[in-house]
Length: 223
View (cartoon, rainbow, N blue to C red):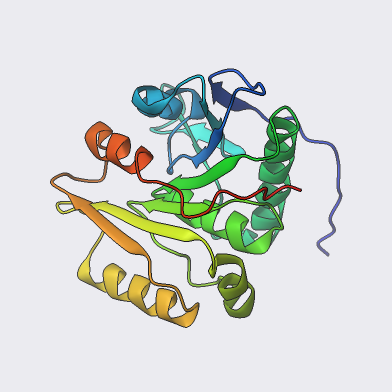
């Protein structure tokens, strides 16, 4: 007989910049499968500034990338006990978000960003929580097929959504693109697509261009 227990869990996250009243923009970024937050956040060095804070939570499950020693990576979930893992990481990510935003002013512009597996993670956070944000960026990843349709439509209807991908991305097959289009249609959004010459990777040049795109609204989302 399977039984469950709840207990306090300690987890870590990385910050690029200093939380203060001077911060005008927060990027909440989720890494891909097999990455660690302390390395992933370095990819955002070129867009960090005193007015733009980068926060990178880390997947709750770490493992050796090869064998039983050597490099370690983290993952957000697997197919095993997935519903419970999704609930756990939404609780964790919400806690990180609340801790960070409590140190910032209220009229804050917030980007939710997910790379690869992190795209599904940040999509679920955006649609299955009540956290405030005003744009969603999925890079080298797609909306997961299990998003709640009505709730997702309501949560994303007034948000800026971007899909960013490399034209040589070996994981972004034609079937995956069609799946993405089908999910986007189901939840009634039309994301803006941004492509670049590259593989399954982050491009500093594209990231910098993305960071310069104006936010659609400047509202007090946390009032």
